[in-house]
Length: 265
Ligand SMILES: NC(=O)c1ccc[n+]([C@@H]2O[C@H](COP(=O)([O-])OP(=O)(O)OC[C@H]3O[C@@H](n4cnc5c(N)ncnc54)[C@H](O)[C@@H]3O)[C@@H](O)[C@H]2O)c1
Image: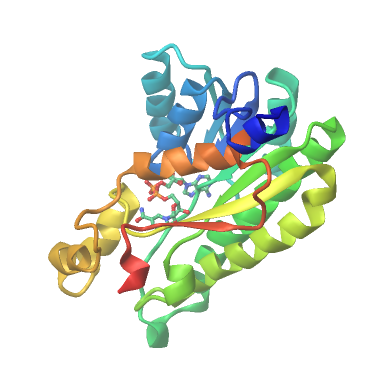
């Protein structure tokens, strides 16, 4: 078998992230925390960002218990100045970012007819504009370093299906998907890949709040998942780290649906 064929069979690429600087937003909880821990476990030097200092400390503590290289910095992803300062801090303390995971996000339910503009704007600003600000700042860093990179956005199954009492949330996530594809097109020439993971219901603080308020509650939500269980943050961390790695070296502009089959029913 030629060397090329061996590479095509996957033996030439690795899911290791050794020495790479990977930035994770929303790293204090749920999917962002799990992605931070797994990326560090696979050899990355992780910059964990969150607005919540106590949650962020807990992520660092979980990492240091396993001798993982996780540095943290409080950063509000909706604040352009804070994102810019954090990007400079990452470059100066860890080196230029080669990976970015945009997991910071929030959901606050409200029926469409009662949606105040303030709540609409809050969700769009955090989920969509926050992703834009971080992706733009760190993509600029990747271009400047000439090292290329991989950006993984976190969208949602609701960006495809829409959501009752979540028109703002679904719109923000559909926006993240369009942003992801547009960035993939523009950044490919810099060897920067941009992909999205679209989770279904994953058991995190965010999801528990949503399910508790949903009509029919937990049992009804569970009944809509063919694989018969809610996702766990680790179900997302592995695909995210795959997309960060060289194993995904020819994948860009794609969305990986991770939902136990819920979009099928
Ligand atoms: N859990 C699910 O079922 C589910 C489903 C689909 C999509 N998602 C998406 O996955 C992502 C992660 O969600 P999760 O379930 O892990 O939620 P989570 O609530 O467990 O974690 C979200 C983190 O984002 C942080 N955050 C909030 N505002 C911030 C800001 N302005 N700047 C920086 N950090 C901020 C929070 O402090 C928190 O640590 C979100 O974008 C969410 O929309 C989650």
